[in-house]
Image (cartoon, rainbow, N blue to C red):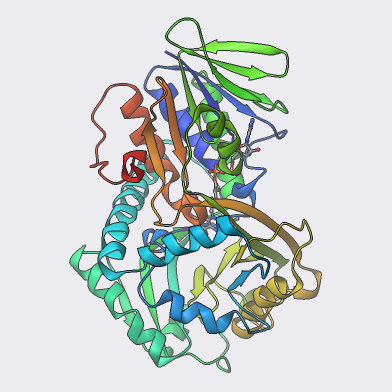
Length: 415
Ligand SMILES: Cc1cc2nc3c(=O)[nH]c(=O)nc-3n(C[C@H](O)[C@H](O)[C@H](O)COP(=O)(O)OP(=O)(O)OC[C@H]3O[C@@H](n4cnc5c(N)ncnc54)[C@H](O)[C@@H]3O)c2cc1C
């Protein structure tokens, strides 16, 4: 089958790779000049199934609301009235109910854990070098946060995931450069989780995909997907129309514009996040692997000779300007935990919008439009879920049963 994949982020590239593996003739169409130039570019690089668990969790609205008024906050909401945002927020709050959260968590975890297996198999096959580190440490600043995470620990035990709850002294053994002056009530350590440089991985996977026949069309934007006279679809690029048997939309924040004209409307809202990248100055004072600050919801990762800080969720910001307080939040977290590690003053910043669903898991699979498939809505987790999602989708398109249960991962959950 001839398949066009729209979008060359981590989701599109992995999808193309596994479709070609399954014997399809694949073309990736990407409006930027290379792969991983949009949201995938900013990824903190954490590849941990627990990182992929939904933000819509019990207690989260109560935790975030007082933060809105602080100078350094993990979340910011536009003060202007925005009907679409409030509608989305209402749905998000409904998903924070404990029963809904457990359902969403199981769905997200199922996909992310499978993705970890698929990535491991890929790494055995290809000698990819993408600044990978092993181990993931979640830091709790307060006893309340540590207590709050008990439910997560029970979940990990139930799923037989290797983890250790650490007292501060044990956390300092895992990450010896962690500052002793920042408040630390405890930590959760996941030795089998990892992090890596997402764009670097995408570029190497692009070469692997090209070697098995995938072609890439860069610097061209798909204007529309149209019904063809035959049973297939047509991809419109300016004046030219290319007929294909099937289309996969993996276009991140460009997906909505392609789907709405076809009558496919999904409850997305663009959430903006930020990244700060700083060159390491003192290697003895830098993190060894990936960490997350649970209070500020900021990930800290080591990428070779650089350190990356990523996080903060911004809703309803239409300005292209980077918000100063978001940048302050990232730098505060870096300076709190690893004050002498990097040249924070010379850090470079990036921000991008991620279409985010209120419940958490992405949307994979068929749509009401024949031969049109989706791999979208991974939000802040797609580096952790991309390989598994791509494999599932390639199986679905090829008429094979996916290796995991796809219940709750398709668009049918939105009716
Ligand atoms: C700051 C930040 C930190 C993150 N940290 C992590 C993390 O630690 N762990 C994790 O798992 N995930 C993380 N993520 C999430 C993850 O990196 C992104 O969500 C993910 O990369 C999105 O992948 P994607 O392929 O769906 O989207 P994108 O990378 O945005 O790719 C979509 C592509 O489609 C193209 N496109 C759109 N419309 C069209 C069109 N009409 N025609 C042609 N091309 C089109 C775009 O140019 C774009 O390149 C983070 C994200 C951000 C922003």
